[in-house]
Length: 442
Image 1: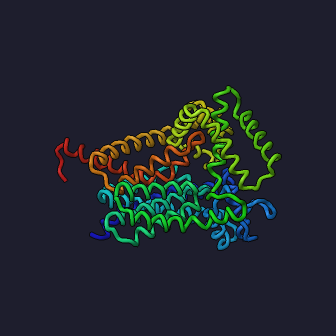
Image 2 (image 1 turned 60 degrees about the vertical axis):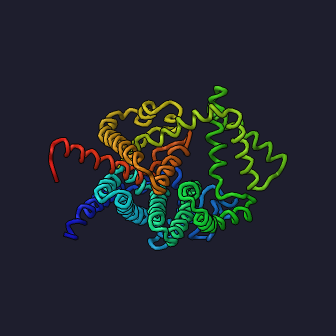
Image 3 (image 1 turned 30 degrees about the vertical axis):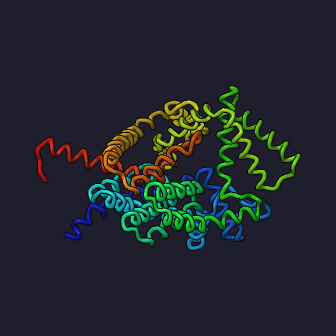
């Protein structure tokens, strides 16, 4: 009976492995399929760490402040063992992503029951954005694994009040920030849940100390080497290159490129007049972008929310490129943000509209997943949500809203496990209701 009870989960994990390995095998002779423009940054920084022990884009260049070292270290470690093999990196990521399906099962089983856990794991196994992220040289898959592991540890703490899961959850959350700096906001959410929902000041202080001890050394490093008192310049980059120019372009009716040129000219004037350090230049970039947002808050809010909707857009349009079809037109995400989903799909597919019919079943399945997730959330909210529920709901809202004008379906990867748990609740509810209506007893 014990083996029989584990068989459905094993089948799910095997399916997850086969789907991800299938994409890897399809592109085994063309490794460039697994790279994106961001992949080059991670790959070069990993090479710099492995060859020179430096975290910089060039031997004599400025310190790297935008990227954090977590994913490059992961790449460098695999490269050191495999002899600079991109395929080895993707094999490790695939195995981690299969393990993530197991974590999703645990998450659903602990929050609800085993049936929800199995359905959640099955949905995770066939989630297209998760499958694609596992065979991309990007940080999304690793970050999703670490975020889900941290949530599981914190759920254990909420249930048992033991200190060990809280400490380990804080460590994993802190380490996840080095993979994706947005993890810093997750740490803030955990503190809010501990303070406001659990009313546990002592536990919140312990978590804060553990979390700060993890990210503090990198903040200190940035201040020492570049006079920058922050963990990453991601926010500065976003405000200066994306949010500020997009808002300025909309308000003044100019192109985004023209808006960026104007902000760059203002930054150049500051550089000529002040001769600032690297860190002060980054702080200035942030202040220029922030000034635009403050001057036009409602335009910014409208564009930010519209862009964030793109997080929920189908990620299946990347499948053709992974399978060897000609890549889509450049600038698709900008079209998506400014002109809507249908225009962006036509822009990406160009003259290959026949691909749209291949993608339709995937999009239909995604919509069904959203429908079941909505049912699951409604069912759960009707109950009295505990700290774990608040932690997950706030995390999903954070990652869904934060991207703004540069929203992309890949930013849904970290919250896909939680969405699949909600969908698992919806599926189980639907099945139970169908059984009751038909008068069938199990």
